[in-house]
Image 1: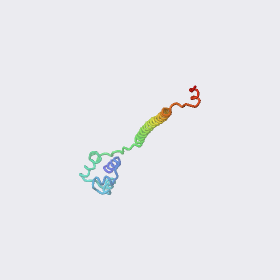
Image 2: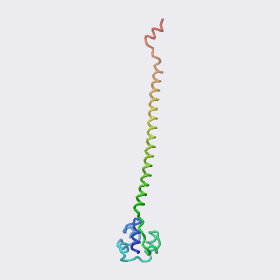
Image 3: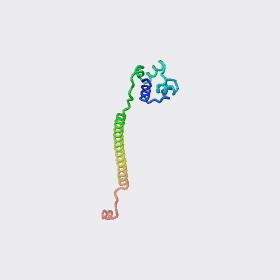
Image 4: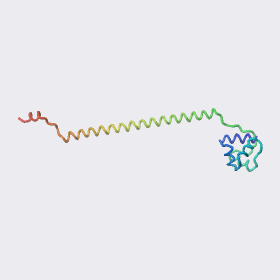
Length: 140
């Protein structure tokens, strides 16, 4: 029972035998022996193992714990995350498109205003164009 519980809890926490051994200051082979049922840890190590896995010593020594990795639940959660990320990306692209359109519009209006002001300045500085025909009409 202990060997199965230890293995299942270790996998649920995502720890390797080496990582668990480092936390307990033992060698990996010791953890392997525990999981194979060839030996058991002393009382102090049992307490430390229970603390690492956030469970009680009686749970470690008691009935077999089930491995709680239901692939369907994991797949559903991943799908939900993907949907949320896709929606977020769509919103982000939409915002950047709006910003780009606004900036291009501002640039176009600025250029148009500059051209119009330059043309107005040219007309103002040169004055009205008087042709020779206009002069002839004005002189009697």
